[in-house]
Image (tube, rainbow, N blue to C red; front, side, top):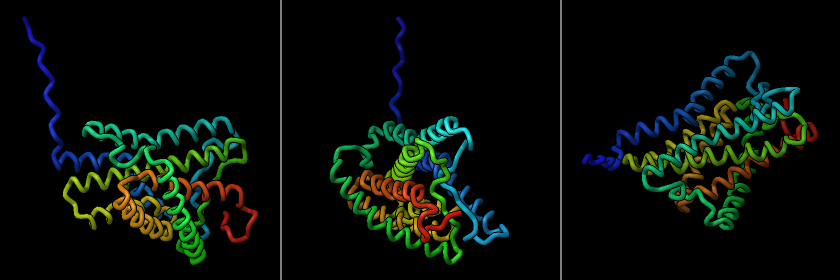
Length: 262
């Protein structure tokens, strides 16, 4: 009678494997975006036009003149953008935990919503002032948060895009990255710097204002995450900030004099 061998228990990942895992996750997501943003900014600096005269479109049309195909492309990219979060969730399950360990759940809905709204109100206004100032001074590109056609699905897609950005960035750059670098033995100041600088790096395509503003936002978010132990209120804050930026631009562009447009 033959016996079926039992599968060996999964060994606890070594620091080397955790470091490799972190690099792979970032290389498939926002770390790669940071490199792309650096290349894009280098291209902008070498253009004949000044930075303030160049445009960075955040939610552009994928199929101009073909709204239904455009909608399919928009939903495809939103869904694909969440795959690194799915990967992080899978890796945490292999660690015998889940995304709940990062505070990504609906267990404190009202508290998370209240905290997120307060953070969004504080950061959103100051971020707008920084952007307008840096764009007027010529250190930032003109950011067009929406380049979508004026069709029925424009606002819903902008809302989905705002939440996709928020979930991706806060789960990966805040919760997951801080957890992994802590497991790797990094000090808190080093972890804070890594998360904040990474957040700033993939916004560099917008210009110096985008870089500096998001580094500051990263520091604030790290400190709040350390205090609350939950990414969910910061996901809410980020989603609200992006919603106001995306939808507000779509509704106000060309109708108010203070908002820079292409």
